[in-house]
Length: 198
Image (cartoon, rainbow, N blue to C red):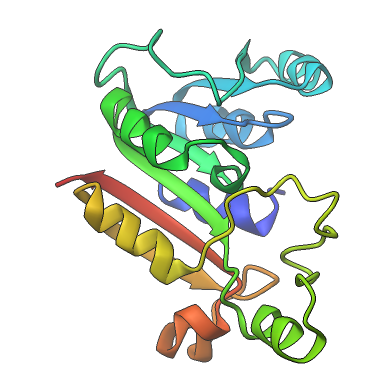
């Protein structure tokens, strides 16, 4: 069974889509989509152990650093480009979003919310960089170099003329909640966005 985040992503992918998964990890999502939705999928990852796990799952995978451009891919080569919890670790997330929607007709991006009330409280009362379930690393060990709130991300999408066609704001366990729907930037822990070109 897929982890909750990947279940939500899978629900946003259509049968027989051509899918590229950036930072695909062990290939679990692509293997699931291939079996259940008969997608044609490829993954990109930089970690050799992840590449081996993908190959063991019969997932097509290429070793690639996401900080290098995606120029090897043609325009509209994919129906969907997925990037789960990876945007914030890249050097130029704005340029990567544009590239994702050059090579794909749509993209699905998931990210943690630095504006969550627990993060705000830790900054306000402790004066320290937040550590929480959805941001579990100390500042000196975090892979995250571009933390943002949902409001920040949505402003960037507007500036880049990217259309948000689906937005799902969830809690720390990827469960939906009334509070996160009403006040997403304060009460949502993770955001899952499906984007298209305007």
